[in-house]
Length: 86
Image (cartoon, rainbow, N blue to C red; front, side):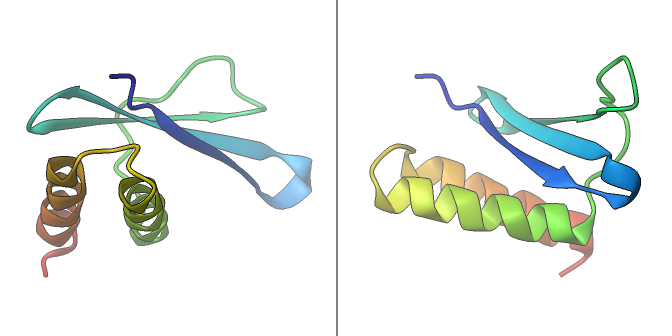
């Protein structure tokens, strides 16, 4: 099942930032970001707390629409809590 989740947000000075999340395994989640003023994707910058909030919201909506399994929702919540020290 394809489980890519992505969104685009507008930053200052008319720069767009695209965020893409993929699930390469049952216990893995891969973040990618790319700004419109940069040429390559960034795989190393950790997600912000706002990014975590956004992905939890998106995954919850997809789960309720039966487009993602429950273990993905659990994984995202667990990784968010670990990353934010909750």
